[in-house]
Every structure is written in C-alpha cells, then in structure tokens.
Amino acid sequence: MNRPLVRLPLRTTGTAPVRKWLKWGLAAAFLLALAFAARFMQVEIETSRLQARYLSELTRDVGFSVENGPSHSIRFPQADKGPYDSRLGYALLPSFQKRLLERGFEISAQSRDSERMLSLADNGLFIPYAEKDQAGLQLFDGTGAPLFGAQFPGRVYDSFDSIPPLVVNSLLFIEDRYLLDPDQPNRNPAIDWGRFSRALVDQGARVFNRHQSTPGGSTLATQIEKFRHSADGRTATPPEKLRQIASASVRAYLNGPQTMPARQQIVVHYLNSVPLAAQPGIGEINGIGDGLAAWYGRDFNDVNRILKAPSTEENLAEQGEAFRQVLSLMIAQRAPSYLLNHGYTELERLTDSYLRLLATGGVISTPLRDAALSAQVDLRHAPQKTQNADSYVSRKAVTSMRSHLLAALGIPSFYELDRLDLQAKGTLNNAVQQAVSERLAAAATRDGAQAAGIVGYEMLRPADDPSKIAYSFTLFERRDGANLVRVQTDSVNQPFDINSGARLNLGSTAKMRTVVTYLQIVSDLHARYGSMSIPELKAVKPDPNDQLTRWALDYLTHTPDRSLQAMLDAAVERKYSASPGETFYTGGGAQTFNNFDSDDNSRILTVHRAFQH
Image 1 (cartoon, rainbow, N blue to C red):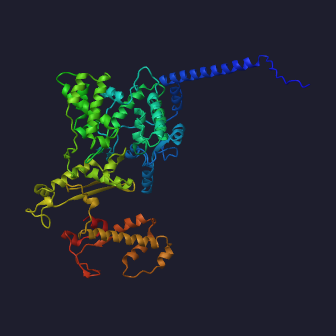
Image 2: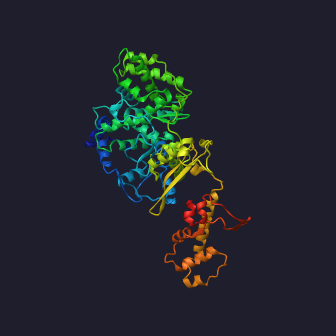
Image 3: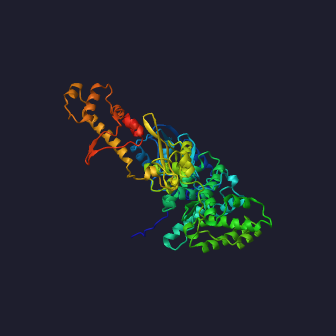
C-alpha cells in the first residue's frame, strides 16, 4: 500500500526575523547616511568651510621669487590660449627670450616658481598669481627718465570703493547675486551651486533635445578666467568649464580662507577687463571705462560722479542716461560684437527688460528706472581723432626705440607692441636729444641758419630757404667697449626717420665708403698675416707698390699687441698728405682733388683727423 507523499513545513528557529530586521536596519542606516550626506553637502554649499580649509592650505606655498640668471623652474601660458596672455605678451615670452638671446642679450634675472605653483600649472590650471587689470609699454631713456607710456585699458577702477554702489549692485543682480554675501566669509566665489546644478540639468536635457536652451552657470570669477585665459575667450568644452572653476577656486584662496577681499577684487577685475568688442581707429576695447568712452563718448570720471550722487529731481535725467549706458555695457558682454553693432536694437530691448527687473528687485528706484527707460542713448561709431600736440621731431627718440623693439621681438605692429606688459630702457639721453632737436628745428629758419653758421661761401645763401633742407644728427658715446647711441634725431616733422630709414646715394657718402673699404683691407691683411711668426713675416715679399701690405707686415713685426682692434686703431692713425697736388689713379684714370678748406692744402693728417674734417 503506497503512502501519500506529505510535505511538512520546516520549523524556524528565529533566523527569518533576524534577517528581516537586518534588512530594515541597513535601509535605515543608508537613509540616515544619505540624510547626513545631504545635510553635510547643504552646510558645505552654504559655508564652503571645507573648501576654504583645503584650498587655503593648498595655496599656502603658491608663489614665486625673482633671482639672478635664467630660470629652469618657470611655466608660461600656452601661446594658443587666452586673449589676456597673448595681448600682454606672457604667452610670447619663450619666443621673445629666444630671439633676444640670439641677438646678444642676456637674462639678468628671472622668476622662480614654487613647487606648488609648478604642480598646479602642470595639472592644467591657469597659473595663479596676482594679475594686472592695466598694462602697456613703458620706455625710459639712459638716465631713467620716462619717454613713453601706454596703458590699456586707459580707464579703470583703482579699488572696490571707487565703484558706485549702484553699479556693483546691478552687476551682482544680473550675474552673481550672492558673491558678496557677508554671512558667508569663506564662500568660494568660483561656483554658484544653484546655477551650476541647473546648467548641468540643461546640458543633460540637450542630449535628448538639441534645441534645449542652456543658460550659463558661470560666476563672475569663472567668467574672468574664461575671457582672460581660455582659448579665444570661450568655453568650448565641459572640461574647460571645470578648468575655469578649479583655477578661479585656487585664485580665490591665495590669501587665506577669508575670501571677502578676493570677492570684492573680482568685481573690480570684471568691470576693468570685460571684453566689449572693437572699433576702427581704437582696436580692442576692454572694461567699462574704455567702453563708455568708445561706444558712448562719455567721460569715465564724470559718469562715476553722476552715479555716486544721491538721486534728485535735478540730476535724475542725467543719472538715468548714465546708468542706462553702464547697464547696456554689462549686458553687451554676452555677445559684444553683435549687440554693440548690428544688434543694438536687441541690446536696447534687453536693457529695458533689465531696468524693469532691477526696479522690481529693489536694486534701483522707480524714478531712476523711468528716467533710464526714457533716456535716448545712441552709439558712437566714429571715434573722434585727437591731434597729438607734440611734433614728430620731438618724438624721434620714442619712435626709434619702438622700431628697434619691433625688430628685436618680432612684433608685427606698434598696436601689438604698445599693449605688451613691457618696460624697456634705451641708451638715448632725452634731455640732449630734445636740445639737439630744438637746434635742428631752429636751423630751418633764416635766423637760426645764420646763427648756426651755415650761411656763407659755398653754403647757404642769404636768399635761400633753409626750411627746405632736412638735417639729421646721430651721436654715439664709446663706453666699456660698446658704441652707445645717445642722440638720434632729424628735422623732418614726419614719422620717417632719416637716420635709420633713409638710403643715401650722395657724393659725401664716398668718404664713408672709402674709410670702410680701407678698414676692410686692413682686416683682411690681419686675417692673412696676424698669426705668422716674425721670421715668416720677414720672408713675405709684397709688391713694391702695395703700400698697405708693406705697412701691415711692418706693423705686425714690431707690435706687441696683434689683436684686430689694435691694428685697426693703428691704421686710422696713419698719416697722409692733404696736398691737392697729389695724383691718384682709379678705374677712370688719373685723379686730383681740391680741399674744402684751403688751409688743409699744406697739412699732413691722420685718417682719423681727415675723416673728421
């Protein structure tokens, strides 16, 4: 008899309830950890406490020192990167250094970056240092007196306190509302977590919908990194955005965990260097100050005075106009080449919109809003050209130095040269230069020519017009084995420099060519016989008519100094007769000459003295 198969339930000994409670316990722990992490992140986002501690420690050893000689611990910006690095010449320093070393210059001192600064640069961050808002070419003469100074941009805010509060509050409302929050002393100004997270979401949505709008998540700090150091001043990729954020974060904590001074400086840097397109006759325009002058023809100091003044019925109209101009430039930075040219109608519409938003947000008063909305503001497309009061003659020294710098550095134009962060000291003595220039200018008048002694026999006649003659003058000083140019000027009131740019084909240049040829022959004789011993020299039998070779052999036989310089010096001290009765032969046959000064007819002069005459 078959028995039915009976399945009996297994008896438990409490294992299932334990597993059940363990599962719920782990779930609860995970939720608690998640809640704690969320709370921790919220606190960190609000205070930046950990970022401040870590980054201020990280940047403690960031720095550099300037020491004698060339440096092997230095990094330069990449040549194809930011507009700021290219315009000021920082990215071009390696090529400048190479060209100058090839031309005989030496590196007297150079920066040594700290190990931490090198590490940050090698890891892809923009080099962290205190950047300049304003720079340009500075030239000095041999005495240290200033000759020339260019500053770009030309109009800047010197400090945070010099900015009208109305401008600061409006900028923060538009671009970075919590930047100067006094309740967050350690705030990292490089990132606004709310805007950043929204930007990430929009970028993710763009994967599925390419028409999805993607408003920027940039703060003022990252915008500065972008238009100064990113390629073409743009954010081309997400990694480039992260690079901007990381670089701005490091820069914010260079002076410690308290970032309020750094955040105030961000406002100054932004207003001083925001790109605002370019204009013919001006070139690249950066900063609100230069933007007001170029695009609206406004005086920067006057606009700031108007905006700092309390609003009254008397000044409300001019305050509204000035504020509208400043606000439009803040908005125009989003697409300056378009909005400040063909898209100005769109810029006016955006400015009206932001004026209403600023009033609604309590940043500006309703009367100021209405005054700005009603202001008629037009762009100035044709910059007014100002005549330089100085003559070209008085600027010959500056023009000469700038021309030499162009050639030495390989810069294609004065426009680019003047925008370099560069100081140069020349050998010219400007006081003497100006004195000589004045004498040359005076010689262009009849009285001045008479006083200079250039009116007389075989010179100018009293009826001649001396203004039609161009005079040039160059003075060298021999010092420490080098010929230093102390004066180089002419009387031509044009940019053209006779001394360095003219090609002369005059009879008087024959004297120069004769002396140069003479010295070249002596140099060749030195190369041929200078290394021979005295017996070898005595064994040489030159042509009896070859007087120079006979002299060279005799000189080298008896001199204790066989250097080329000594032989050239001796050659120019050789004496020759100045008698016009002498006959000499050239390819054209027998030649004679006349002396300008008949007193020289009976003299025997050295080559040196004769050339001076």
